[in-house]
Image (cartoon, rainbow over all chains, first blue to last red; front, side, top):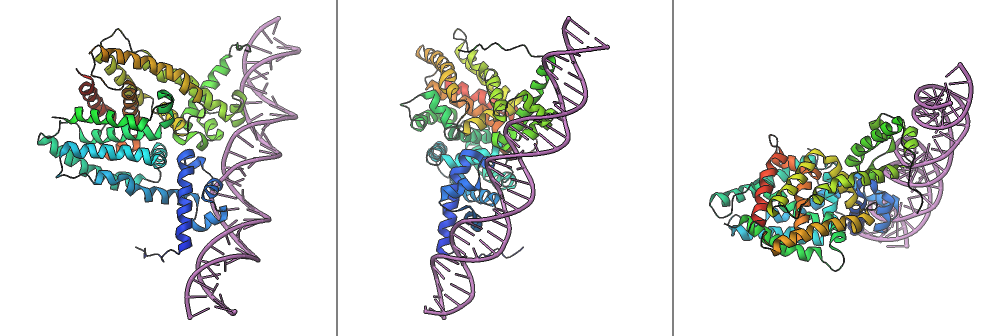
Length: 205
Length: 205
DNA sequence: TCCTTTATTGACCAATTGGTCAGGATCACG
DNA sequence: CGTGATCCTGACCAATTGGTCAATAAAGGA
């Protein structure tokens, strides 16, 4: 294993890398990886193209850095599920956190959506590794609660899929949702009580 | 309005246009619009690139033709909801039909997912027009059933979103689902009873 | 069979785009 | 200050890619 320690970033490096990642998030989340150009990223970041490539080796490098950087934040709510908490409240908290993330971070949601749609070329090892472990832990907690009769029994992994699907749908397919609802609706506000009711009915004992 | 009548297609035209659309579906559904090349489509169709462009004016034309051609089939199950049927059975039939479509036609599901993610540049008028009407009709039927006390009351449009999200999730994010479940699982088979139970609990009176 | 229409292709073009590089500007520190 | 390291850019390149076109081949009807 090579020495992983890196020299600390200078102030300028820190700032410009952040600018690039921020711009790249905007561009990738709208156009996908192939649809995004380094020029677009450079413009979004307010830098020149060669300068972007001074901080990142390639477009691929930017993309992979973005994904791995954001993955922890993306999975954080599931990690916070507390096996000692109140079962229904823990699930509801998770659902609300995921919906709030869709509302506040739709770009991140779409970034991951593109990546998974594409077959997750940059995330395969993570999908079968880290993610799987995190889900296994949450599924075990849920299963325990169900075994104790504190939650209605359902397949825990599919329950988790349902939470992902229902919350991320509002970010990933926002234009469709808005088109169907028409003007004067806030999808995220309406989704709150809907999901609340839904999961109470499914999981209530 | 110009005369829309076209000369009937020759046998060769029919066959080659079908080959191209079939190949394009495979390519677009994996790589998205920008990620797909006419060369890939040509190869998937078993034709040369200029020949592909002999049958379609442009890559855009192929894409738009695909979307509009498949849209009817995609929305058909919702149109078949029968206001005179048994409420819960009608909904369950719709859910099962959508799940079955995700299983049998994942490429179509991903094609639409890419399009919506991108902001639906080719479907904007349809989203606010035809789709909206179809959803309005279904929502009105559902609302009527709820008013009559034959279904538990929930926001009908969000109910529809939930069905879309939950069923299409298994097609669009299939690699993630499979990675989390691990080998030896058939996501679609397991999703069947899960969704069945879910919607019975939510909508049962 | 002959001749018009339709189908097919190799060669080509212009635009886009990921990435390089040499040299100049700027910064940080002694 | 001065000087070495860091930062930045215009110009450039090669590969990809959407699309064209003239010429050839294959259908098909009279």
